[in-house]
Structure formats: structure tokens, C-alpha cells
Amino acid sequence: MHSGADLQSNTAVQETIVMYYQEILEIDVNL
Image (cartoon, rainbow, N blue to C red; front, side, top):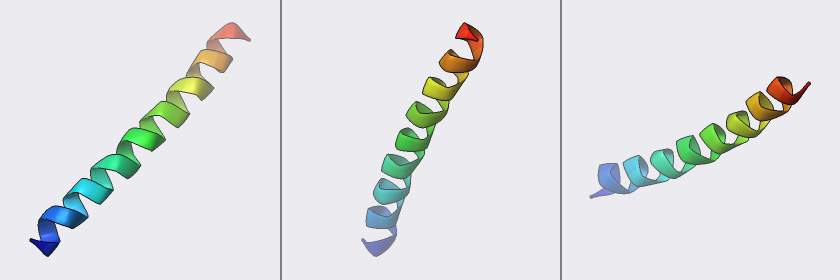
């Protein structure tokens, strides 16, 4: 169960990082 919770937490973090980099990539494209 603990491992499952860790996976969910890691997934949420990865999604946040993906969104963060997508914003950077969009800015780079605009530049």
C-alpha cells in the first residue's frame, strides 16, 4: 500500500513537471 501511495505521489509530481516544461516549451516557441 505504501508503494502505491508513493507511485501516486510521484505521478502527480511528474504531471506537474510536464505541465511546467510544456509552458517553457511554449514560451521558447513563441520567442
